Image (cartoon, rainbow, N blue to C red; front, side):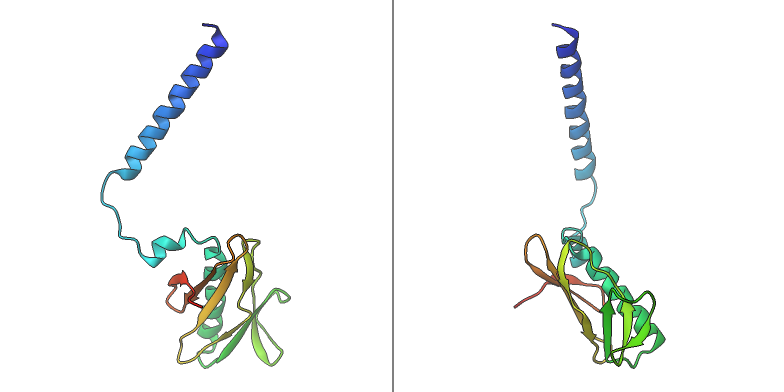
Length: 135
C-alpha cells in the first residue's frame, strides 16, 4: 500500500472515530425537553426575531405607555419619526420580511419574520417565545 493511500485510510479512520466520539458525547446525559427556546435554534430567522424583540423591549423600558413601535434600518438610534418612536433594526438575509410596526397592547405584542429560505412565517412574543405563526 503506498503512503498516499495509507494516509487517506488513517485520516478516514480518525474522522470516523472523532464523529463517533462526538455523537456519543452528545447523546449521553440528561436530555432537555424540546421547548420553544430549544426549537428556536432551528429557526433560521431566530436572530432577527430576538434582535427585533430586544429593540421593542428597549423602547418599552424607556416608555411603557407606547402602543406602537416602528423598527427601521434608516435610523442609527431611537428617534421620533413618522409620529412614532422608531428603533434601529436591520434584518438579516435569512429574513424575507420582519414586522415593521409593532403594536403593543397591555404590554403584549407579537413580531413576525418570514424565512427567506422556506417562506415560513415565525413569530416571537413579549416573553421571547418563538413559534411558527398560524395563518
